[in-house]
Length: 202
Ligand code: GAR
Image (cartoon, rainbow, N blue to C red; front, top):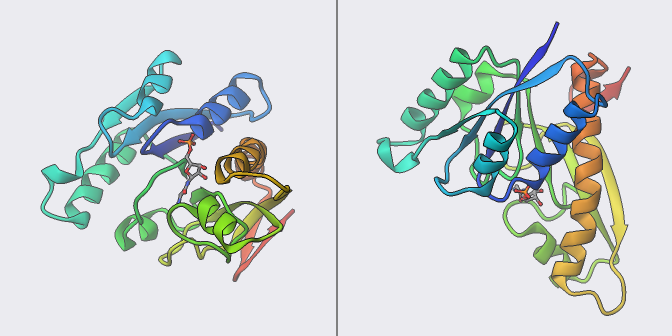
């Protein structure tokens, strides 16, 4: 059975691209990106979707009275597209409780730091400014907290002498493009089991 995926984005969409490429190459099998949804009208990610014949939808949060109404519209689009799995690929909003409840353990986020360190925005800059010697990225299920859900995969990278925050972000991004598709493949193949906070790879 094909897993129908929705990818939520806000920006350039390089992680979206890595998922598209890994589906097209056959690394992720039995999966299809049914829709890409953005909260930003001119997000380059939308163009990437169109380039691959994927339905793209811009939902403007400012058209809605609040988060709940805005996410109701997202849920309608998810339902219309028979979505089984939601990926947050550079989606810069906290997901509300109704959407999380509707897709419990079926929403996966990529975060550019080794959680639980450096949650929230500009995680690479936060890690760089803190002076860590190792950072990395985390793929995790989404729960009601900010970047607190059960961890699926992490990879680490060194912070090298003379690095800028941008150098570090680039090194982390390379790893993001590996572990996000890997996590999606495991999910699609039914190989992830959530036991409390622990994700077991079966
Ligand atoms: C990625 O580094 C992703 O980890 C990060 O935004 C970037 C999006 O890049 N996400 C967050 O910071 C979420 N809190 P992309 O649009 O090229 O995939």
